[in-house]
Length: 327
Ligand code: SAH
Ligand code: SF4
Image (cartoon, rainbow, N blue to C red; front, side):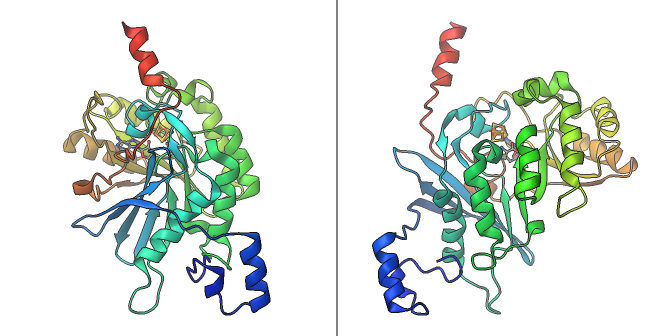
């Protein structure tokens, strides 16, 4: 199923006929159902996966030289309410099942096939689509194990990345259960600001998060954590923020990925100016860090980071509640 992309037990002619029949009686193979597909001029492709009840989540493929990265969703919406994130603003509906998570990789592999030399096109997976992967822990870890399994996708642990807003207890569990590469959405260098931008910080503040990163590194397949930092004009992009950030991560082997903020309607934020972004990057680099500014890809199809809106019917009715409170 995963290795050859078969969607029917009857196709699996390398299995004994009796086994195929038995499998057919026990289980079904149900490929994900896709509601829409878009392709960007830069080669980025985006699929909208139908997850029922008028809900859709997005999967994005980003080609970059010899690397092909699939950005996979883990939840329908997200309950963590980061203020600059369009998924978070939409509220939370439900967790994706294992089949819906791994189905995104199955589908994209199927849609893209292999390159002319027979090499696989998807070389890396990042759990950076919609949702907080560590808030759907059991299903995400099961799906990760299928990604790593030689009988399925056979990806190395270094090529599979979980991105988290910092659920500390789940980071500790992941280190024991399935230590893949780790990206942490930092976005602010002090608790006061992070409490606002990434509200889960009120539960797991920065000192605890940094300690969890260090513990994770004991088992991680890479010897650094990637810190993601969204660049918000005038909010977190000033020289004082860079100085605080350098101090914060002093003991944590890390790389920085600065993400230009991708605006969405009524976000209330603007992306940092180019000169502020470069100044911020240069200060981190002068302190000895490796820093990349993420290229915006698939902008013409709203496939860039933080633009994955999908279709989420918010079961928490949070937006309504908020409006009632403000009246
Ligand atoms: N929930 C996980 C993974 C999904 S989000 C997490 O928060 O890490 C993947 C990355 O996109 C995160 O770093 C997230 O903070 C960032 N992001 C969210 N909204 C964004 C926006 N509007 N512009 C740029 N990056 C954004
Ligand atoms: Fe959820 Fe991540 Fe968006 Fe925060 S940034 S609301 S954790 S998806």
